[in-house]
Length: 101
Image (cartoon, rainbow, N blue to C red; front, side):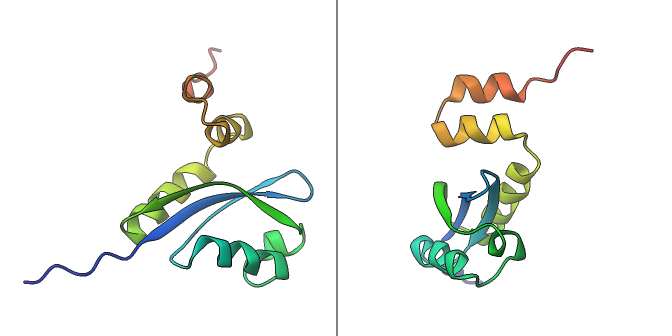
């Protein structure tokens, strides 16, 4: 067997014009993918909320890792996403804790 060449992928968060966040992943260069969102190519969510701005991204070595991370982040609260964007790991941990009922 041979080792497949690693395909770099990105998971990213965009801030939309209406203040909402969009999480996606791509194997394209990140700047180009953001530009595509801004001209309306691709996802319908951002098409209606332009312009968008890249606020966070992570480069990963495999597409499957990017897809997994994208799914994880999409399930997060706004508060948790904002902690990730800010790079505030303490706030991220606090946002991850379940509320006591």
